[in-house]
Image 1: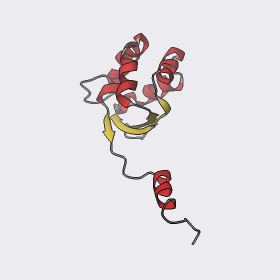
Image 2 (image 1 turned 135 degrees about the vertical axis):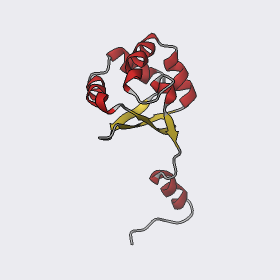
Image 3 (image 1 turned 90 degrees about the horizontal axis):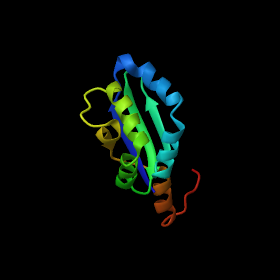
Image 4 (image 1 turned 60 degrees about the vertical axis):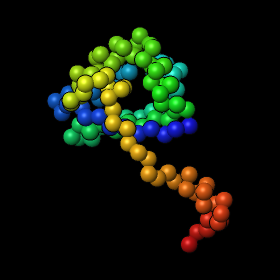
Length: 120
């Protein structure tokens, strides 16, 4: 399972609307996300409009392609696209993916295979 973190910039004057829309995502959109491999998906919105997203998926490209093939995603992206700053692509394609530099469980697993972890 791959962990994916990304950012987008929500327009400051549209932040409340963005949050309201995500408080009640369409049931068919929720199901499509789940069915196409978007798991443990969360969005976080900072007070300046910075949106940080996190998801886990077996294959991000496949998850994106799966959503692109759904009618509900086309409707959702069309409605949400206007809420973002300087975005030339639909939000689900135009996000900036961040590079993971640390994951506790991965390092613990690597460390415990060589040296037992003890409390100091």
